[in-house]
Length: 321
Image (tube, rainbow, N blue to C red; front, side):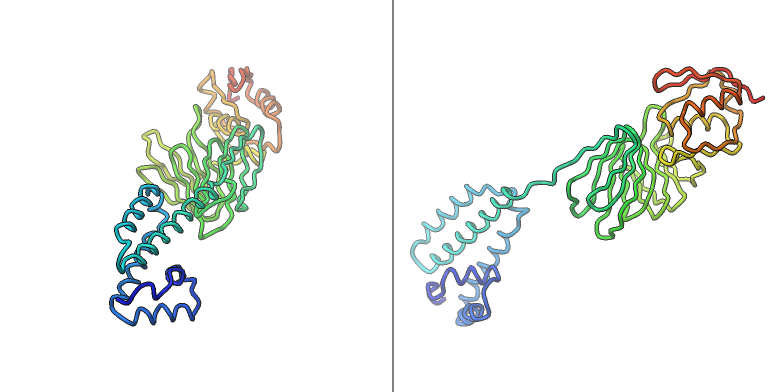
């Protein structure tokens, strides 16, 4: 190998970092062509440079310890042809160490925003997704999204997800994962009186637990069954979105279902004192009606009365007439 001092350390670093211009690159390549040893020397430096550039490895490297190792190697090779090699190697470590420090000093993960809806609220996310949250729902999301648009959710909300085929939108809720590219759906997590449920309106959704996954198409719903397994069916409940739209429609609907839909729309729970009343049916439509108005009409129709105890409403009496 020719004397490495024939080629400058600065020029070698430019070549390794691919910042050398055409003339500088030609000089290095001509020096490499002068002997097999020269070519091998540059290949060794290239390998060192390539390995050093892996930030994922840098995260687990003790820089102080490795720098001491480099210094000891330099001291061992102060004489002879390897001196320039280790000077360049040391320069590589210094550059990568600096990059590592800059990474940690300048990079910080996006700030997480936690939003709790004190009333029905509409929230626009950084990607253009619009989420309408029911009162009491909570959504956690970053100020800026990365390769995946990941959020955490609890409660009930309608998601209108902005289309982005490169960045999936992922919702973690109740130990489930909802994954979409761009679609709209209603998602409800489990409470003490209602189960987890997703109803798809448009697009396609992948919904999964740790053990299983289902794909939904428009008009389908998935819920957690009593056995802990996912149950996918066609959605037959036209009032699943009543909490958002303010419209309730019943056509010969059993009162047990009527009270379930009204309860979900107004964040209350009904308890029937007369279980037989649950088999009576109702045909009616309510548009933007207050809960008290709806209950007043039901009292007249079915000879019943209601006793409200915070979020629980006791249903007394009731007959089909």
